[in-house]
Length: 97
Image 1 (cartoon, helix red, strand yellow):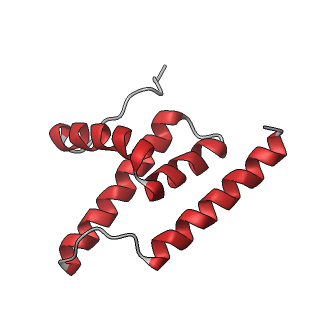
Image 2: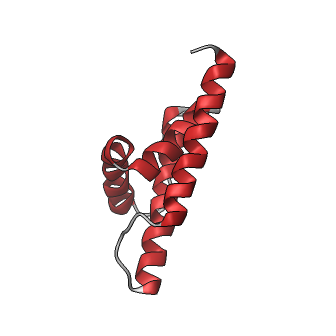
Image 3: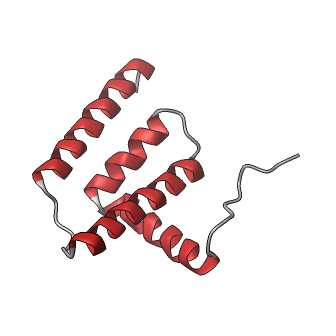
């Protein structure tokens, strides 16, 4: 029987650093926090949502390296944040919290 509580594949040192960074980001970074809360509100397991955040931050970091730019909360990122926040509120209303 397969366990659902393991993350494997890829490079372990990078995966470990990303995992620890996401534990901090879901508490401090508004965009990642909204993304994580939206996934959990949809019923995803916490570790699955955390892994999705790890993948998302890797995509963001790769784009930053490609475009040679620094992290900044852009108008688009704020729109994403508002979108996820409104979805989260809608889901919470549906389940009665």
